[in-house]
Length: 288
Figure: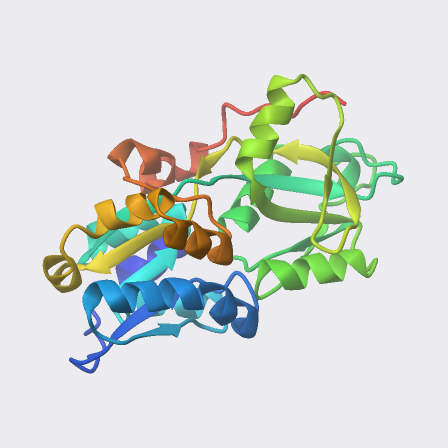
């Protein structure tokens, strides 16, 4: 879990960066080449705003990435929302802006399979991202609600370093189910339409059927160390204003985010330590 890692390592000294450069740490939810290529335009834009070169860094695993966050290795951080409360409490990072995208966690299977609920996944194999991810935490929460009877046992979880590796394992037929983070706006729109069966397409075109979905939550969040915030001007306003220009819209399309919005403390309440275990208690699986 993220919480003990941050508390245990919160006192480590920060890794000093060259005064003429800044580092942007991005959580490893894609393979390093895909991650660096996708966010190169954001790196270049931040370089212009800060008037110093910015380099992208990441980590092989989420656990290593969390340790580096606790040690304040990076000047700026682009990470998922469940990390934000701990960073703002235990480190000198402060949230700058969040992506406009809403996210949701899905548990999905192939359409033709006989699984209609999480309970049906007894003895099955599930492809999941890193154990410290919110997706895996939600999966554990969903599985903990089940009573495995008649010789059935809890599914076997196959964890991967990032989401794309979990998807690949599932598409290859090595697991019967997949847990992933996806576009929460799409999930909300289908829910409002009263869809009884939710189908979606993975990046390679594979069609999957959703058997459970979490409530939606804020998207990726950009944080910066206090020293960077002090010298960056109104970085929040600049990020929000990207949608107002053709150049800014081109950048947003390149990094595949709709835009940025100011963050509110209430955005991250479900992810605070005292609420984490109950974050999804109000959600009930949809009837198929």
